[in-house]
View (cartoon, rainbow, N blue to C red):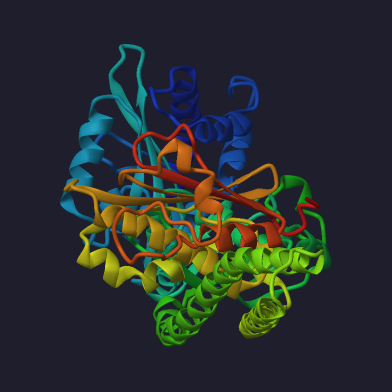
Length: 545
């Protein structure tokens, strides 16, 4: 009965407390709290009878309590009973501390009292305990209510159980951290990209590669897949077609060497977070690309090492054959002159020159012998084998040539400044011949530097794409080729070197022939004064040139 009387007595007081609170809410009071009580009181409470106001507050879906300045409970609604397990008749007259679980840090309570004692709103989380001893997390809002003199007269509290929400949030955070840890532990590059090709998820391997490349790895992978594997990601997306184990090569500037990756991709459904999708049965957005790139550089280098040994033998044989062709072609050219003279002398005798018959017979014999020799020399010229053209990566060809001449570079103290474009268009050609072309150019650059007195010996190699052409520049800081000899160096059997083996050509005639055979060209830059710069231009595959 005493409790009922207290409750009845408190009805006008509660209306006044909440009305005073709404009239002058403290700074920082959440808008939701103000809205909730405004709905309870409708027109500020002034037009509501006390018993009707009591019903509105009692039926509110959030736990409401009013305490005095010492936190003794003066009023609690039904939601408070349901949440705490305490009947309001038990709670009224008790201190709010009956809900404390004693595990909330003391510093939290100190902050709470310092805030509300200063007439400010406090919002936070406490660990509370129900009547049955079970724990729950309470999200609490406490607002001081001021009297007409501006002093704190009461405290108005609202709290709700956020135990399950907090559990779900922490579980979601744990799952996210676990997923990220698994991603970071994976020894492959992983990235998830949306339809605008923006990275929305990445692992540490992707971040490391971004640092190595100095830019977004996906842009490089996309171009490499298009150029080297002829795979269009936009088409694959439209068809929903995955791809697996597509090997691509990425070249880096400096001496780091190329890196190889085996790329796989799958299209996964994105999440549609638009508000308008709330009532939609299908909340899936446009597909996202899950890209996996496994670095296979170590394995490829082992394969390349064995392949290079084979290439050294093949290239040596090829260069020997090409050298024979150049030497024999020059010999044939030189032999043609005397034979022409002998043939002319024979014609003079036939026209009545008066020479004895014996001289005529001797000249005829020399002529016949010379022709047989000429036919024999022409017969031993190595035939040029016609090979099928394939898709060739010039960065790869150049890197192989650099490896083939590495020993000579080290012996002569020559530094290679390797500046390839990360991905260059493939060219249609014969890899063996193109390899020989660049080997001739590298050999000439090395020979130029062998006679150089400079302590800083350098060969710079640059690859790039210009208007459908793949450009390769090889320049050295040696003595260069005199301008008057820059045309002669392309003649067979001609050498501009003042040192080395006598009679050896430069191979530039054969190099230009190979470039021309592939629809391109080879030139010496006449304006380059700090050594020699040779430029090779080859049409990219599909350029139509």
